[in-house]
Image 1 (cartoon, rainbow, N blue to C red):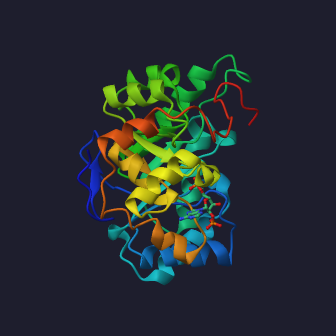
Image 2 (cartoon, protein in one colour):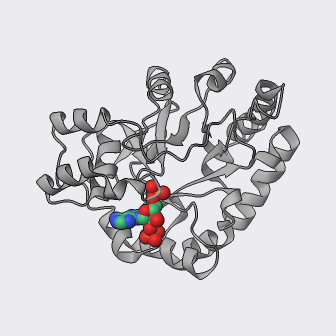
Length: 285
Ligand code: A2P
């Protein structure tokens, strides 16, 4: 069971860097005022960790929010991701420059390969991933990125990267009750790669789940809070997204209770539900 007591508590990555235990998710957060206001609200609520990506289209707004919030850069942990069209060595270097310019910062805490090259589209998917990884490794060694990792990688995608000079520190995968991706989860745990959970609420689809509703009422908590706490107790780092001030705060109020072992087992054993259906080898993007 995890011993997290506040948003300042951290997981330690395999390179020794600490990462604040809940990240503020920004996928599907519209650019402009909504992104600026929700990130300012998150920082006010105590989030120390913000997760974005070039493809979310909101990096400029997030940069603006960070500036406006007045928080010191070194108090924040900022993650972004290289998008699929920029895979490869030179293109990844250029994508990184654009991302830090848009965010108005001079280093990233974590940079991820957003999706492995899909076997559906590329015969040489493994080489493409390695070329992208070469650029990430170079930026890491130059200190422009404190930690590097991947997203949506399954064990067969991770294999070659784990044999390189610098192995990934993080794999950010879809992870929520009803979709734990057990094989990938185990592979990451066995290799000391931290799993981050995107869509820990199943993009909201878990919120009406009857099993979770029954469990949440026992603890006097919302289903969203159960999903977030459940990630932490599984040693996965949740990245809940919200643009609503009351929910942004609610999603941080998960340090004053513990889900029992029995309830953890019940949730871990839930049948498949609420998945996005995006299989990394079959997607068309
Ligand atoms: P909104 O952003 O409009 O507040 P996920 O993090 O799994 O992708 O889920 C995000 C979705 O869940 C969004 O639609 C978000 O809505 C909603 N959401 C986030 N936190 C809560 C909460 N505490 N209660 C209800 N819905 C929430």
